[in-house]
Length: 202
Image (cartoon, rainbow, N blue to C red):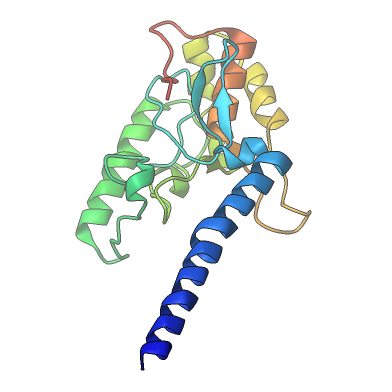
């Protein structure tokens, strides 16, 4: 019985060292050598070199001169430590009221926007961290951004279209734009808007 116990302890110790220490260290080392930027969280810096976010995690933009992403139900909003959706179903009155209020607010803030408010601008993603929008939802906001920055809508539209990402491998997913990348490009092209930046350092 004692031999079985000692053998079990040895097997457990070897397993812990291999899978809990050696394997993570080797994988981390390979990741840092092969794709260091992605391994460090795909962090994004502005023109001054200040880290302003990650291209993988959305954040809130309230300045009208910036592209606004999807609403978030993660914690207090875009909280990577509390990633989740709202878990409200299609028959939920709370969801209906929230979507209605958000749509009315967006319509008031975007009086020159074409057509109805895109559904993704009033509904949270399953993770609450989605950093992307469809090109259609981004272009819907162009008139507001152009007015806030006092430039032509065509110039803002060109920035958005330049940053459209295609389907992965040509067939997976949908075309999209990264909200943070577009906002940094807008600042780079037209300067930071009056009232200060809405891209906080992380």
